[in-house]
Image (cartoon, rainbow, N blue to C red; front, side, top):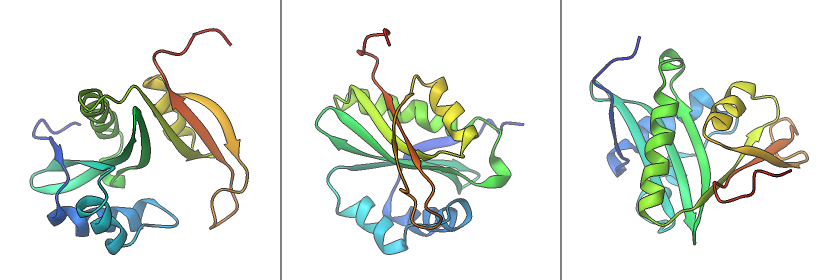
Length: 156
């Protein structure tokens, strides 16, 4: 059941430890605390949004703004909170924030085996656009490149 007290806000330097903990839980090759701190405090292209319940960060999304494109770096929700529409909520907020920054389209890479994530992204209009062979260093898995471009022609 979804807790109505979900707070979605810009990530701050004080969120680094919580984000790093989620990285370790959610990803085979997690980003380090140093890398996350750099993203939040020194990378002028980076924008991160967290979802918080009762003062605890339970999800986050990060993206880089490159001109009018948003390059999504990571989307994560703590396993015990999955299935509560937290990822959908933070992606929707990310798109709103991006629109206010002039972002018109988004791209990301997702593990070819990650069907739940691909389905989530499809719900937001992302389409599979290519493959990066052997992209993931931990096991050589391919990455599916997905794009969300509302201005693109529906033909194809």
